[in-house]
Each structure stands twice: as C-alpha cells, then as structure tokens.
Length: 356
Ligand SMILES: CCC(=O)SCCNC(=O)CCNC(=O)[C@H](O)C(C)(C)COP(=O)(O)OP(=O)(O)OC[C@H]1O[C@@H](n2cnc3c(N)ncnc32)[C@H](O)[C@@H]1OP(=O)(O)O
Ligand SMILES: O=CC(=O)O
Ligand SMILES: [Mg+2]
Image (cartoon, rainbow, N blue to C red):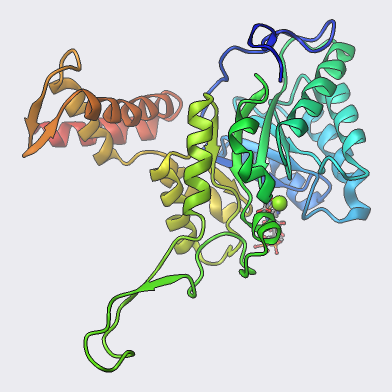
C-alpha cells in the first residue's frame, strides 16, 4: 500500500502527473466492437456519431487466432479515424494471458495519445491494478505522453468482488468498474448459463392460501445481480469513480435488456455495455434521466432556495437530503443536454409543462 503522501506521484520518471479527479464525460453506453472484424470496423465512423464510448475489444469474443489482427486493427482505426468527442477505450486481454503484454506495449506506444481508458478484465485485487499502473507509467514515459491513461476494472471474479473496495481505490488512474456477469457467474459456480439478466428459477413465492401448496401463490422473479451491483456502486462512489452494468447477452430481448439497464441506472450506474447496435439506443434512453424526472428535480431545487429547511411540493416533503437527490438528476441532465440539443429541448419542454 502506497503512503497517502505518494498516492499522486508519477510511478515512472517522465510519466504524466496522475489526475486528482477523473473526468466525467457522458459514458451511457460503452460500445464493444472487434477491431479485427472488417464489417464492424467499417461501421466505426458512423457509430462514433451515435455512442459516448467506442471500445476496441481484444479479449473474450475475439478468437485466439485473431488476437493480433484485433490489436493491429485498433491501431489502424485509432490512427485513421477522427472520433470527435467520442471516447476511445480498449479492453486488453487478461493479465495471465499470452497477449496482454504486447497489447499494452503496442497500444500505449502507437496510440496512447488517442486512447482514454484501458479496461482490464478479471481483476482479482489491488495487486492487479498496481501492476498495470506501474507498467503504464513506464510506457507513457517512453512514448512521451502528456495525459495519463485511465484504468477500468471488470468485476468478474469472486476475489474481485471480495476486494472491490481496494480495487476501486488502488490508483488515481481508476476511472470505473463494470459488472461482468458471465465470468462472475462462472467464477462463483453460479448455475446460470445466461449472460446477465434474470433467471426464472431465482424467485420468491407468496405464502400458501389454503391446504393446496400450489394454488394461488404468485411468484416474483428476483435480480441475480442486485447484491453485486449495489456493492460495486458503493465501492465506486466511495472512491470517486464510476460504476457500470456490463453485458446483456440476449440481444433479441430488448425489453429485458432495458429493464436490466434501468435497475443499474436506478442503483447508481452511469452506463452499460452495448454489444450490438440495437443496444445503443436502449442505453441512451435508460441512462439519460427522463424529462419528467428532470422537471421534478429542477422544481424541487428552485423551491428549496439555498437548499436548507423543508418545503411541501405536491404533498411530498422536501429537505436538505432530497434536494441533493434532485441535484444528482439535474446535474446529469445538464451535462448530457450540453452536447445534445434534442435532449435539452425535451428537458426544457417538460419543465414548461410542469410549471404551466
Ligand atoms: C459475455 C462476456 C463478454 O465479454 S461480452 C463482450 C464481448 N462480446 C462482444 O464484444 C460481442 C460483440 N458483438 C458481436 O460480436 C456481435 O454483435 C454478435 C453478438 C456476434 C452478433 O453479430 P451478428 O450475428 O453479425 O449480428 P447481426 O447480423 O444482427 O449484425 C447486423 C450488422 O451489425 C454488425 N454488428 C454486429 N455487432 C456489432 C458491433 N458490436 N459493432 C459494430 N457492428 C456490429 C454486423 O457485422 C452486421 O453488419 P452487416 O450489416 O452485415 O454489415
Ligand atoms: O466480460 C464480461 C463478462 O460478463 O464476463
Ligand atoms: Mg468477462
């Protein structure tokens, strides 16, 4: 464990100063694509106009014999494409794999100035972040980078969950954490074969009404991921970094995908992964607060003046705490609306309706 006095010191001579606060541009959807897949790569310029984050994936879902093509493809795309304000992230291979060292050396050396965040899979504890932290500092120094690369961990091992608080605070590079429900299910020996989402067998049942134990008893499906998402959100919030829901594998089931994303949004996540173009608009809709919620939040903030005391609005008590809740929603809306005139207009229109 580094002394708090040294926490913000660069880890290599010539490496850029670590950031004191992570930037928070919109990152409602982290759109995964395989940079070695020509069809997907061809869509990057158009996708860049639609998504907050483009992620060139080098890890799982890229065949072993396509790893080098994916890595080289990402280098070419990053050099050739103007992504505008859209962030460029990558997911490198896991730290025990034969590819990760070359992933990091190549990407930082060739396109370190174009990349914003490096996603590290299968993080087990702070030691994994410390390893990446020092290596990145050495590579940044050698490449002459002036802006530090940020690190995002996937929470997808039982050890990772047990150590999530120390992972979140392991380095000033830590930008955020995503839930990885597929690897996590395997690591925990959970008995679901689905990639994220619920399971019809994970339920609670109302009490029996008579002698017949099968008669008239409603069941409610429960969220398999509630505990982990909530724990991840707390670890992130306590360390000033951002939590994300990860993949939802049933691409066809856009309805359940929206539900899973919304559960994560309500619990505090700022975004989710999109694995297929059809999931982009779902994430955009869910992780942008609704116009009605924004209108309400702005109304409470206006009514609360300096933010102290208590007022009644439409029969609901508001005080210092509830105005803070409303500021979370209103500040997110302002940040998103700043770059999205359509959203800004929807928020303003809802505000006018509420005050009419
Ligand atoms: C579970 C744990 C994890 O690690 S999740 C993260 C790793 N997995 C991934 O990154 C998967 C990314 N997605 C994919 O590989 C594909 O979307 C999968 C799921 C295989 C479906 O592809 P496919 O059968 O081609 O779907 P489709 O015919 O509906 O595609 C229509 C057109 O869209 C394209 N497309 C598909 N996915 C993407 C994507 N993620 N980014 C950009 N483009 C995509 C397809 O190539 C297809 O293009 P075209 O119309 O034929 O030109
Ligand atoms: O990488 C993601 C997962 O769910 O596993
Ligand atoms: Mg995984």
